Length: 152
Image (cartoon, rainbow, N blue to C red; front, top):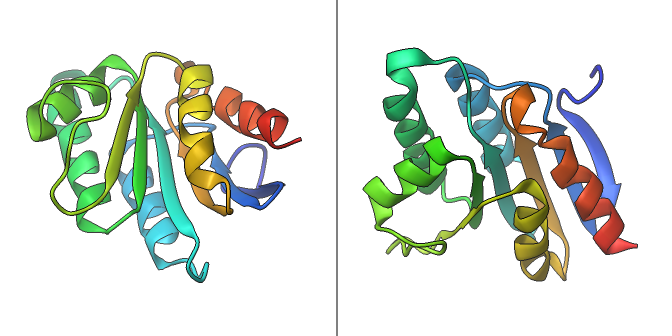
């Protein structure tokens, strides 16, 4: 992998699939399948996703579909940042920063990458596998950096 494209990094007991370089609906769906299919024992699978930019009129539907895929794949927790994912979560699950999902997936909606990293850290105390992905302008590498600093 080159740069922040599906690079595996470790932050204490957490393995991070750093795919923060860019995102579109196809690459996001593929990365989510990789997370769901990964062998990680009984550790949590967590997707931390930033908005996909430059989708035009397809944006709302694409973000909604990606969130549905997270829930359908049985990811343990989903952290979202950006107005498009916030709107998708509100539409699919109801308003608020921690909307409920009857299937058991914990959903966290944050206003910034730093806030998102801090909010998911308690979920990862015993380790886990974390996918970090979003469009370049979302600066999702900040989440990776923050996870590393919080673990040290």
